[in-house]
Amino acid sequence: MTNRQSPAIVLQVTAHAEADKIVTLYCRDLGKITTIAKGAKRSKKRFVNKLEPFTSLVVTCRPPKKGTLFFLSEAELVNAHLFLRRHYPGYVTATFISELVRRFSGDQDGDPAVFALLSWALAGLAERKNQGVIAVFFLLRLLTACGYRPQLTGCAVCGAAIDQQPAFALYPANGSLLCLRCRRQSRGSSLQLTRQTLKFLASGQQLPLSRLTRLHMSTANAYQALRALCSYSRHILQQDIHSWKQLQLLMQETEHPSQPAATIRRPE
Image 1 (cartoon, rainbow, N blue to C red):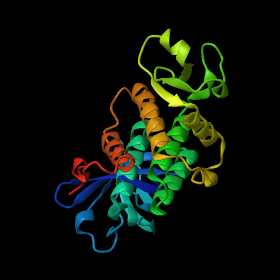
Image 2: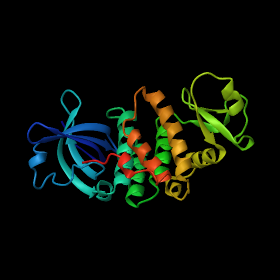
Image 3: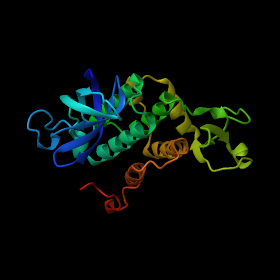
Image 4: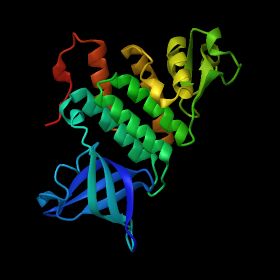
């Protein structure tokens, strides 16, 4: 079968057999694919320092004759994003972002908008932008790209606009807002969002990617937004987002620096 070439970002790498690696990529043209890199653990030229999490590449791969495992034949390094593997907050946030892409993306379902969003997030983290803000807006825009845009303009029951109430609650069953009065009359769990947080999120849905990192959201607002959006995402996916637990600990430590750093488990 004909080889395919595409810009790609490494989402996950696992060892396979004695010398191979299984590499999950998000490609601009192919979407999420799982590849096998033969001899990658022993490679001194073809794959050396390239098949690492968060690395940007141009890959050449051959589609499988059967099954879903592509054969990765070449990888040209574009950006190693070394900072993300040396800076713990950046690493944790990038891991969270990568897991979201893996869980929300179907195999071989390419979406250039998702690839652009992922590239934007990794570039922002590498520039040491506010990790919490990038995580919030990444998840917010990913939900939109995947057809699950949360409705954040006002109460879904009574129609009260966000400027008319001090706080609302995001209902994870459908991603809609409820004012606090309507929330008391509804069933099911929901998480409260202040008017200020909602204004940040509304801006995040409208602004171009190049302007999102200019928004100055506090750690408290970012944490509040992420808790609600992750709850909504878990409802959609029907499974946990494992890396959220570590990012949550990191954001709590940032918000309350008096807590001992030992509560955060750092990667070995």
